[in-house]
Amino acid sequence: MAFLPESAISQGYRVIAEVSRGWVGPTLPFYEPGSWRLSQSLKLQTDSVILYIEGAVGKVSVYQDKRLLWRGEHPTLWIPLIGRGTIRLQIKGETGGITGGIYLLARSDTQAWPREPYPPPVPLCKTPSLRLNSQEALSLSPLNRTSGLCVGYDFYPPARIQKALLNRQHSLSQLSSSPADSASNQPLSQSAFVLMAVGLALLSAALPSIYEGFWKGMYASVPSGPIEALLSLLWISIGILMAAMCMRATGVFWLFLGFMVIESLTLRYFLRRLEWVWQSWLLPTGLILIVSFLAPKYVFWSLVALWALRALRLILYFPRLTYLCTGEAFLAILLISP
Image (cartoon, rainbow, N blue to C red; front, side):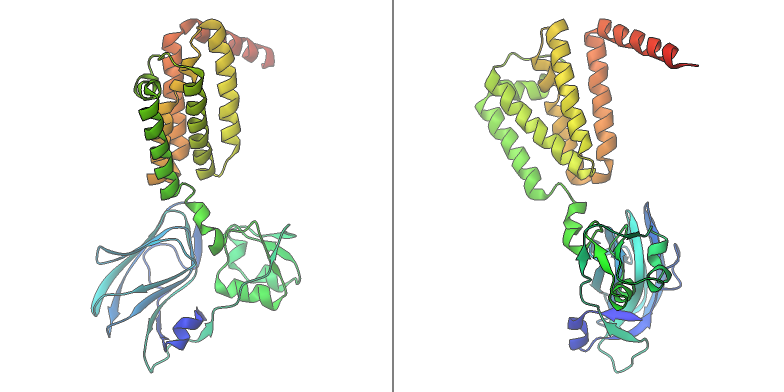
């Protein structure tokens, strides 16, 4: 069954072909935790054909003969195809899948596949009483055996599942991802990135020590005052918080703050160079923000790499602290070993 938007039905679009089969790649419907790819050659008999994908999860890119037609994230994709004749379609995704079906639509007198209007929104609930994993979520069996439950999914369910939820008087857990919160999959928006960049530029123009600390802080501390330290720490904290939101792990932000406090106390006691604690994070935070904006899925590894690079710099700057930490770790291993 093809579930079409009301606007498509009112405009006279019909399903002229169901093309959920025949793809090189995973078999529809599917949900992949990693990247996936589908490819197939199709023959278009007429112009103005619409490729309709229902139940898309995650960011999807659609190519026609190496030409990018669509890139974005939405549960229903409405993509006009170009020209007629034999074309090559490729559909790629970073993570997720297609949990519904793929159809060709056109304003035609021939109806080759049954259709229904896309179901209305499913009522929302708070705490799921039935939690379905990615495999169970593609089946109607768990829903048909029960009724009136609060059901939780790893992704927003396709139209056939939504219809079953409504028929069995189920509700959808608010913990499930939905079209309304699809923007949360792009945590660092363009406006947030621009505001952080403008904020750093203004701080660097008003306080030269911040500018020097940005470029020299990784290998040397620059003398500064309390105002520079406070504003720089604020900028760094907001940047790391954005990166943590990008990873959907706010615990990383609190771990970062904890390490900042420990480093402040340690370096103040041993090195008398407190400025290095925050100046050494100015450049890494800027790099993490760029990664969060351009390639969000690599934020965690970029944070780990920059943290390791900064730790290596600390080791080279003060090797005695490294020896002390290594000795304590070795003693801990001896104590906990059987």
